[in-house]
Amino acid sequence: MGLNASVRCTCIKEGKALPHPFPELLAFDETGEPTLRKEGQISLDLWLAHDKWYRTSCSHSGVLVDRRLGNIALVAHVREFLQRNSPNDFPLLVERVVYSGSHCGDWVAVNDVPQLLTETRRLQGLTSDPLILQFANDMTALAEASLATGNPIVF
Image (cartoon, rainbow, N blue to C red; front, side):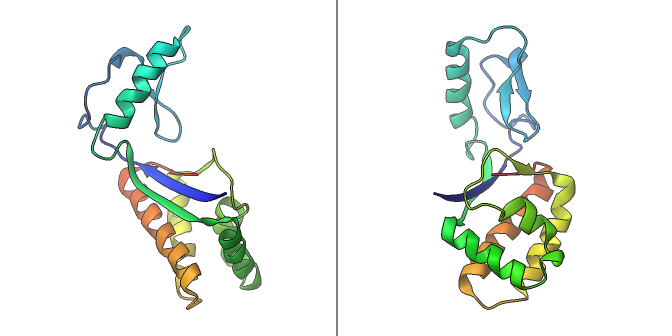
């Protein structure tokens, strides 16, 4: 088990992706993921066709940046480091990213990403630990992609 995070690309929203098989049903959820509108009953066949399309919709397969932030032990290592070194300086990292080494289904909204990027850059300046620096570098890549696309960081 571990913690993964990603930022979706904007190819679909910008019309750079292959056409959707049911454009009248295409919608986007709060994380930027393309989904099918919940109006009426959507059949399994429609969902399967949508999922197949999404995997091949663009060269990114819908995901611009995807990072494995670490296994449970590494995330705990980062969390413990932050808690020892001014946890009040890292509220988003502590409360929204490393609070668990295996959370999923949540996200950091784009309007919180500038603060997250500031915290991540602060973390980079605090240590020479290669594991924490790799974590910080991965978080920086995710934050920069989030700001560039307007899409949240999704766990």
